[in-house]
Image (tube, rainbow, N blue to C red; front, side, top):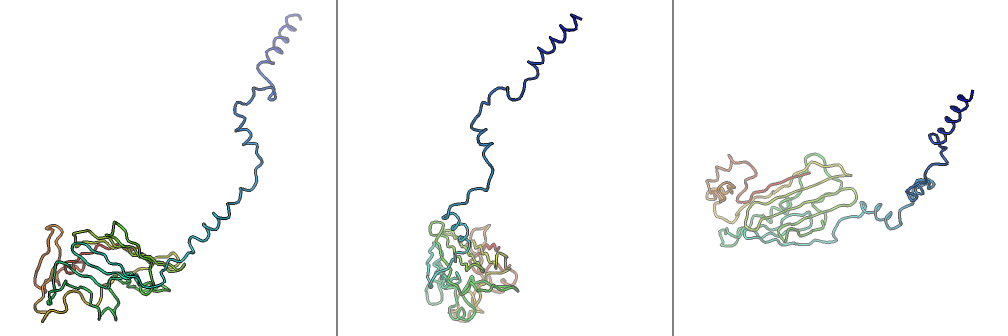
Length: 246
């Protein structure tokens, strides 16, 4: 009997150390985290008034100019005058080439452009935007240290962006265009209509040559005008265009 009582007493003593109540455990080491965890859960704080107005109105702000603005871009080979009305080229001269009157060769046909619109205008396949950006005053921005130009227009529904980037002594330039209606892209092209080249030359169809820039040889190649039928359409005179549309 005495041995049994001794064993029971030993078990009770050991249970005090092995099974401590939860309210007698060690104190928490990180009271700050515990306070944060015990903080009452409610609705998140409302954003400030300024932040709310900026977030909700940023996408609705129109991007448009009030009148026509002309921007001149000069490189060693080009002298170009752009208009923000549609982001088109109103004059495009080749400095190293002369027309029949000895003046820098003008590639833009001014009279034809009045009917067909100026080079680099938007041309639509089937769908046409509710607002034609070709006749909208876009916002021009000079980029790339004066060798680039960006046009943007948005009225909250129709959005159009056109970016150009030139090299200082290269006939090759890059064009990127974007056109969307209610955030949905619209298939389109950039057109150069109304002719290209020297229209002052006598008997131009018989005497003029075909010119294209060979990137591999880094020079202009001159051939008879009939060879143009065998060339790809992106080789137009000495001007080469790399175009990406979205």
